[in-house]
Amino acid sequence: MDKKFVVRPKNPNKKEDKSVTMTIRIDRELQKKYADLAEKSHHSRNELVSMALRYALDNLEFIPDEEESK
Image 1: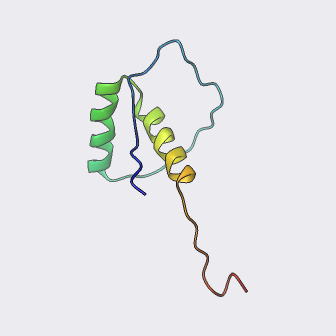
Image 2 (image 1 turned 90 degrees about the vertical axis):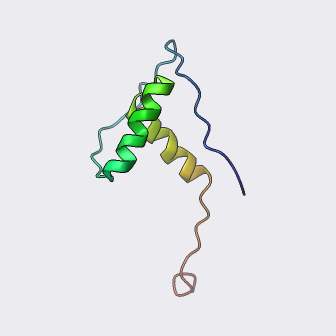
């Protein structure tokens, strides 16, 4: 499965209003990459992280431990 995480420039007319606040810790290098992408795409880092998390869940394959499946 070779699906790409596609980011297009932000549409300023589209608003998302379903949100909650959550604090996470990430590596500085990862934060820098999101900051660079945010600048290029005109999306906030928060929007990009949310998009990436949704993509991860949509493409997740969960494999339970053998003991859990009994």
